[in-house]
Length: 83
Length: 132
Image (cartoon, rainbow over all chains, first blue to last red; front, side, top):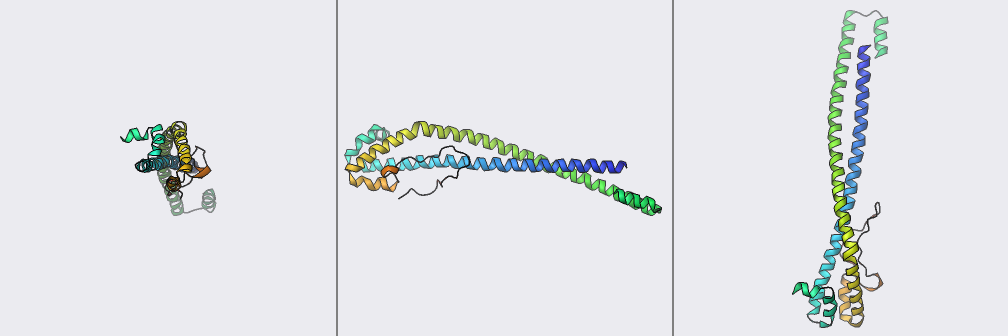
């Protein structure tokens, strides 16, 4: 009888432990997924900034042969930065 | 287990059967204890992992939110204003249009396409080359 009670208690503890494991596992998976999604958004912004920087550099190169664009570049301080 | 006990007691067991039954119960207890310890270890490990994952998420969320806010509020208006001027410039200087086209800043669709922090929406691949 005592042995049966011990078995019941142990089985209950085991069940609770397994349940907690599942909960923690799901939370870890969801958090990791969210982290990846956020990191992707951050990379998108960085990509957009890099793309725009390349574009600005090419505009500066273009300005060497077409000075008419210089006022536009200077209006955002591009020429000043590179000088 | 109870069935086994009742069967063994009702059928007038020999001492050998009782000894085997007790040994079986002992082994079952040991096995259950081992499983509880093992499962507890795994649970603690998973708890730590989920804690680290939540911390990572919170740190990333804070950094990305700041980055996005800075981009949306400060850089994006300047970039779009700059692109607008360059598009106007491209209308009078056709030799500049290929440069706008190369980076996908042509026509009415020439906007800076940074992501808005909308959870759950699929995002385009940031590593894709600029639209031609």
